[in-house]
Image 1 (spheres, rainbow, N blue to C red):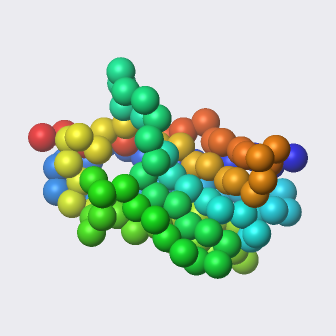
Image 2: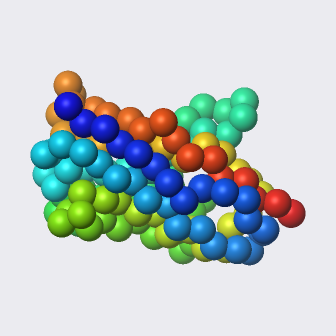
Length: 116
């Protein structure tokens, strides 16, 4: 029913910036919570940030003040603006869309590599 496609990942030096995009198909985007998660090699997947349909945002402490999550419902697209990147931010970043227990969707991920 829903397909999510991430883009914008790549290689960046420490201190640099990167903007990730999540393009969603389907009709539930505007009423769903959209989130970004990441998974580093050997680590569990963790929440980076999310934003509700009403615009309420939540960030992991490790990215507060550096990352900004926002959405454009007219374009069915979510974003993660990342600044002041650190090597420890290196991970595969995944887009998530959640409405109810049985409507929980994930993209394939985009790799972000931050060099020191």
